[in-house]
Image (cartoon, rainbow over all chains, first blue to last red; front, side, top):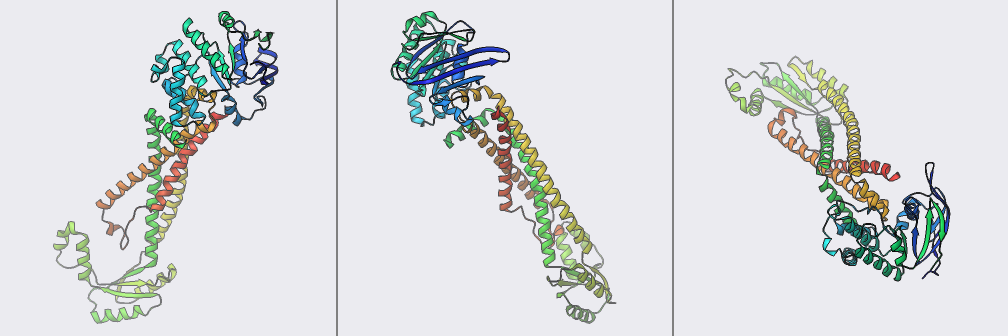
Length: 227
Length: 293
């Protein structure tokens, strides 16, 4: 799995917020179909690194190349296509509150230009995968944190993305649900997706043998390399 | 894809009814004012054209002139340069016409001891003779006859009328411009408010890969719908006023030998397209600013 060509290449990347440096001189490659944990304590720069990959934040310095696209030089009109490579499980869910669970997930597929009947089928299938098919017509504010987390995961995987980015994906879940979600991510990885998980949950890291990239105060402290 | 954009546009119109209704009302009022000016200038221009193509002089005969002399005068006038036709209107015919026009106040006429109206000649001028100086010369020539009491040919009236029409046309253009800009400004602000109420949603849409086109299209459709609805409502209101006006005033008294008409279909289509363009432009200005961020 880990011996494919790099799908993500990061060269001397810095991210600064004013005078504060969130990431400093990060250089690494992530291969296609790799399973990677980005670890480190709170404030280490894990979320920032993930955000830079889909241009959720602009890069201050350096270069990131994703699937052949240089994010420093990417044109504005190509950004949506870059983002469609990713299925992002946001830490703060980012669900649209006035749209139903179905509509939130269908949106990703509408954006990608899928047909109505295919969208219906696909939304049903991802909701079943996260055990939320009975909440299809619910609105996000009526769901618990764990349920919203599952919907975010369902939305992230609905478009069959090449790369899944997960920011603390099990943070709001109970042990059983967390286990189910990790199994789901492993299945998607086995089907060929590159999975990058940012977490400080040591139990979670131990549960799956995978490459670990450890950040601390914005610096790359350790990279176990591909497993 | 277009059907999906249309559905999203309609859904948003449904979700923000107050905001969108206010916008449609503002566009409708703008269209109403502009098209009222158009209606007036269109009919005034038509009236002038009718008048120019059939200028006539009314020659009032002094009282007590025998018919034989009047016939001689008619013959003289009909041989004058630029005269197309001369018709005699007896004082009885003139009174009958007046009675027909004043049928609500018929008693006023019926109570008259004698007919106060003079005999008259209706002198139709050749349409080729459009120079006012020539018409004026002809009128003075006729008036110099000892049989003629007065000649009426509405010169000053038409001059003023043409002047008013030009002012009205200029005002219509200026008003159109002002109200067009007002409509664009209102739509731009409405869309901005809708945008800010949905900013989180739109940010999320971008994060999951929505193109600018995907975000913009429903707003553009909304702008076009608002413009079309406003334009249509404005024209319908004007038409209702127009019908009420037609039924409540004596058109013959206002415009002799001329029928007042509503603005032509072609102009209505142009008005609706302009208001749709205003709706679209308002959206475009708002969205451009937002999507640059």
